[in-house]
Length: 325
Image (cartoon, rainbow, N blue to C red; front, side):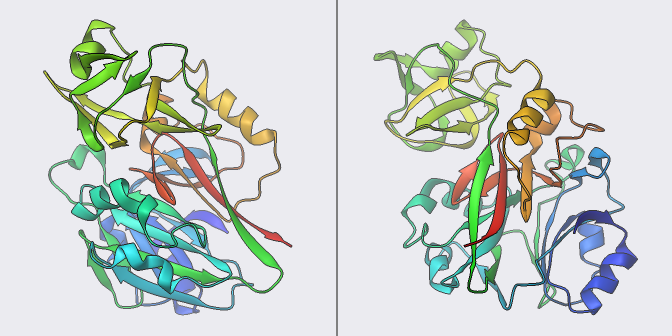
């Protein structure tokens, strides 16, 4: 089940021993009893009726009944690079990281270099808050086993799959590279000043202003046919800040414009039969495409401050399927 539920309903599920991935307002999550769950803060969702903002309900992702075992583990900046050591040989791992934490930044820049990170599917999201509370409240993660909440550490639920089943991660990205200039940055990071535009040295902030770039459109890199986005956060006088790092020597282009996000997204989903075990979508998609009250095919889940599919992604839907093999 993937559904928004009231506090009392969620408490009943926890007390019966169900294994759960939860998303909701901090004031709700901290009222939950201990049990087999992990949770992250966010008040934005894709529910049965479409996009929704609520601090009164919790989004519940039930871990499939056929799962024999789980492990819930907390990680800090020192231990997270060894996350693969705790994974099951056959299974997947759900990870939640608080937005704006040092671990958020470290994971974004370094996760692709973690030992054996691609051995087992690992996916999840960056926890967030009501946008009206930016600068006032910090995003949190919750360890349901211990009742501990944290604004600094990651929480991971490692999930074992029975023999004969396998987990697969995929993404839905409505953005593609546009036909404009080639953009390459000399260093990796969440902000950039210097860059090469078609091989010529320029300041990226000045370029964005000069070209009147629509910063609702992300930078897009082509990784062997898979398009990955880096979203704009702010354009300053001499630097541009991003919601994910740009990587050194990778070619980026401004994304091609999208006519109707909901229609294009639904069309992409309908091309394949997706029965996801887990999904999450980006807060920027929610805002820019005005998804409140709009349905996106059969996709339901939290609207997040960043999506994780081995690494940090932006303006992308991430989903996991479990299939018979």
